[in-house]
Length: 163
Image (cartoon, rainbow, N blue to C red; front, side, top):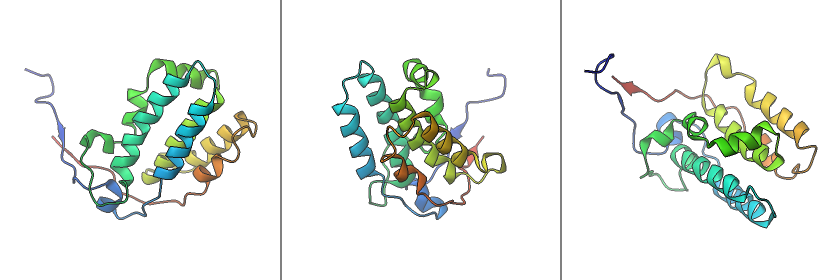
């Protein structure tokens, strides 16, 4: 017997979240391909760490915005954007803690997803985090950050959970 009853499951529409909640779809596929090209062009011992972080973030974007069609066939738990933070590998977290520029650039791509949540306690955080990431990267990837900075505020409803 479990202390709080049976395990919960998420009852989520199989379509990408933007369709379920009526917010504007962003074209994220091209920028992610460019991000992967950048990571591949770097001579970094952390290549596999970055690549794995982008893989995890890509499935969250796919669940949120789709790939240009009206379907999402992946794991429904990827619709929970904060799941990426919980699934983040310790090695990537270490890159963030040492303020590694590429890791911060990847994190900037996650920050955009915060704009899909209408929670009062998140108001202003995406701008604050993007500004701080721009400062910490000292312009090293300034041409990459406009993609993340140019997103409009989006008001949405969060996923529902059946207990």
